[in-house]
Length: 186
Image 1 (cartoon, rainbow, N blue to C red):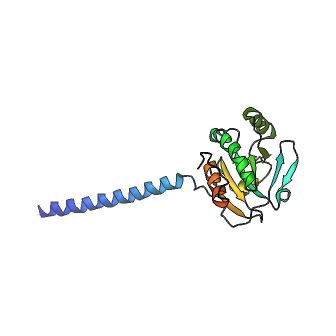
Image 2: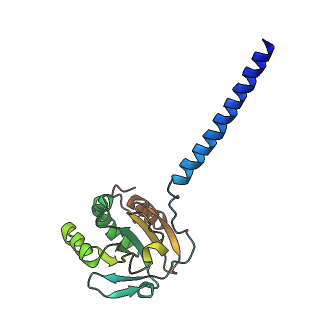
Image 3: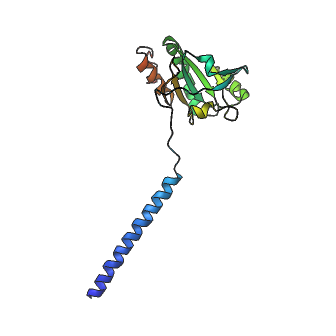
């Protein structure tokens, strides 16, 4: 009887150890299949140089905006949350301008798709085109999700970057109290 009990205890511990090893292996497999965490540019670092195009086809670079505070809003015409944010952006534009910030939409699409997007939504906001196959603008600014933003100060340094437009409105309010006259985004 004691031999049977000893054998049962040893077998039970082997099963427990096997279960632990299998659980660890499964956890590692699941972790390796998860997407990497989303990163944004960090406040204080210099804004990367960029090249983009206007809807008229004119090439622009970071030098064209030197000395200005810019809020780049990264979006895609195929992104439903981007479309839903447009009214908030239109409401934010006068307050951003009052705070001395130029609000620029940056689309990852072709000129034709961007123009259709602008026409459909009757946008009066300035838009730059930065297709991923023509420029590194979006990748250098770590705009891997849309909508997202990057706020650059007059010295060309990143003030803030992140997802969503409510975060942009909060950043403008923190930098320039009173600039965000309560548009419901914060």
